[in-house]
Length: 176
Image (cartoon, rainbow, N blue to C red):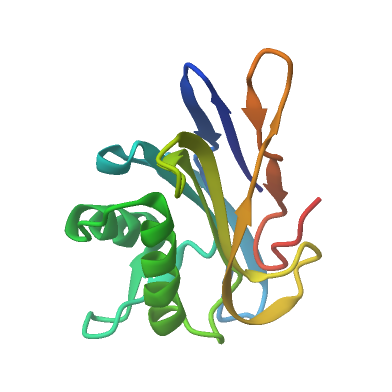
């Protein structure tokens, strides 16, 4: 199960994610074993853009030219370091393009949550939240990774909250 949370207030951004990775391994006998590994990094700062990104779902993606699959956390950390982008919106669209090419439509369910403070067309700073995934809210497959831009709801204290994403363990990866 993965839990990712994002809250943005006038004081800053709070993002949180668990560190457990669940995998199912099929033995030669045909029996399936489920393993949970703790210590995975599912949340990364994007300091140059005053934001952060977290992920859920597939723990590995295929990277063309590499020796097969690479852990999603390693790929994402490298993506943040190598892509020099100007806004969280550009970050989200670039991430979506890369994931559509590398992970493809055949890969397991995968999603990303991007939150931070971005500039509007009028030049004002505003909380932004992008959700990129290849599935719908019930775990059904989408034809490609899509970006959903969300506006948070502010309470009387100026705290903008985005809904909590909770996903079951692999392989079904459906929301609870």
